[in-house]
Image 1: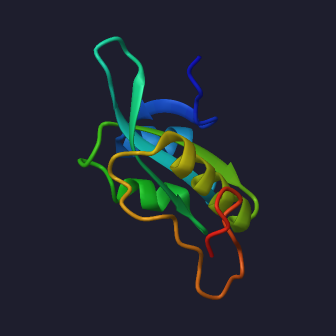
Image 2: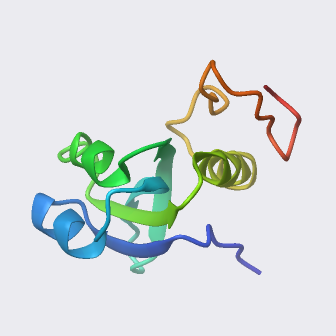
Length: 114
């Protein structure tokens, strides 16, 4: 059984597609990837923004060709989702554990990292 990320998408990683799909300025989590030969999304990287996931996604245009995302009202919830995806999906391009803002005391729900 395949376990998914729980994110919406996948969508083309273009300015037009990002503007169409990510309708609000918000904290969020995103995954970057490619489509396999059988049309399945293959995640290469997971990231987040604590303030504006749409803006951050646009900085990755040209570095991957597809994206998935989810918006969150609370940056801490975005951090926790990013950690969950990092641990369970193990994206190839993520070399280090997701970092929390220095000013926050959040910890990873999977491994307790701070």
